[in-house]
Image 1: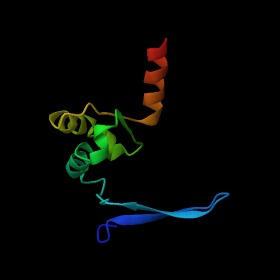
Image 2: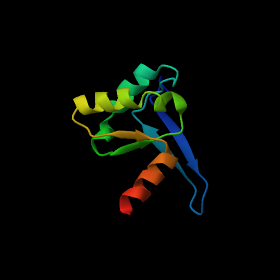
Image 3: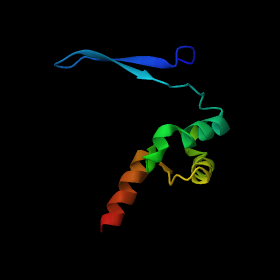
Image 4: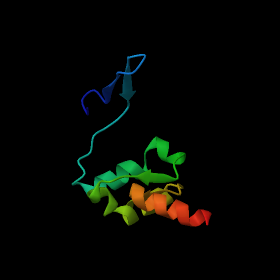
Length: 93
């Protein structure tokens, strides 16, 4: 992935197609500082309010990721999908 900076998705549905995801890099989740930096500085973070992940290594760096994002001017919150669901549900009450 890092060599070509893209990967292929084969959508095998009613209308099968090949989708190429481009301009990507792979970062090993054990390198939490680098993961935090990549996530927080990603181009798509300007639009995202939440990063939902089940990756424990990433979740352990929630504070770091959120601080880096804030320094870049993004209000990003990192959550486990289940925690996100409960926070959203409670806020509607």
